[in-house]
Length: 123
Image 1 (cartoon, rainbow, N blue to C red):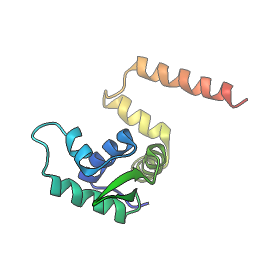
Image 2: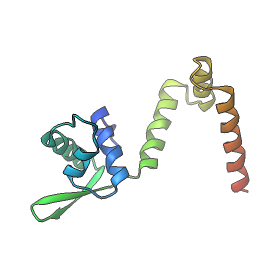
Image 3: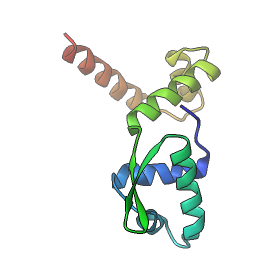
Image 4: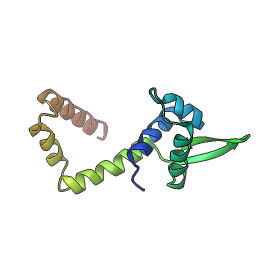
């Protein structure tokens, strides 16, 4: 899975949200001033080349659908971030954010609750 640029990721988030869309639908999702249609079309072509979207010809245009689920993308690249920046340790990552005051004690308690609930479901 090839890493997306910031612009590609932004467009891909809109495609995941829309599920099935044309370039004009993606342009409409952007806050004003929206990027030019041709810029968004070029980004979508890159996403197609990278295997992130599937085109379907509709008249003289294309309808795009995600070829990769959002959760797959997140899982793949978050694993890389943890591996490359936190010595392959999620504990180190959480510790980093706690020390940098990016995550509160209440957030950590909620995370622990989520982990515990996940363990109960898997039993």
